[in-house]
Image (cartoon, rainbow, N blue to C red; front, top):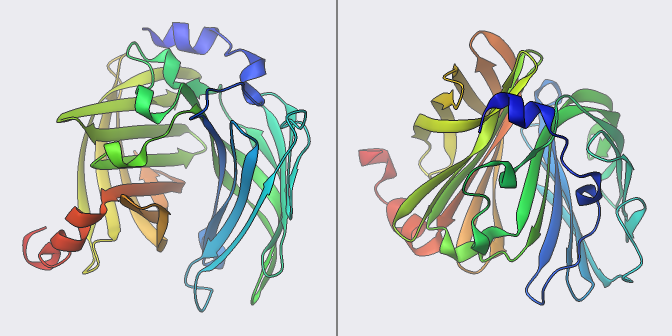
Length: 308
């Protein structure tokens, strides 16, 4: 599929809203916050299952904080509530203009954030890839980069913030443990954006994602990356060369400024890292989430210093 096809075809706006899903369906919308100038990163993460059971999560972490802070609410929401005015406990999300503008807020006991996201480029859906989205990881998902302005309050922090934001939206089944390992990576500068999702499952490696540059959005064709770890196997640096279907090449160097290990599923650990990035000389921010099979990670940590 050519970049012209990706850039010129608008993804249906109804996919910015709540979907009708099968009994195993799960819908989630991630909003990743990255403010290296204040030494803090985090995310606001609404999810809802097909039966209406909803969760809202907010986390902040980084060198500006004494320890990571996590807040969560769970409740059952009505089928009539949609993402144009989504409310679960302290979380509020309002899709103002599909795939263009979103208001996102969290008014928790310790974490408070209110902000507006504005997209920088057309939304990318995994259904735009010839092989689509792996069925065990959803019916479809969208990824997009934009800018966020707002106010963040946390212990020792009360700042008006402005920067890049990663926003993704997935719906359908999600069986976390079928990925033995994955890398969900984002890099954003004013000049270009990179996303790749590299998944290892069933003995096969699959790559989805995009390069956006010069007004053109194209599928990622290949990723070649090298990773440096600390002694707990949290990734500290990632260097990658990506090639898209138009033959364009981009080189990115990502350095972690805030990281935390998360548990979303009993089969896996998620290592979260907010990063500063350099894409071919242009600087920005991004995110690198690594998912590991728990047994493998617990074993490999013993050897990471010697062999990685």
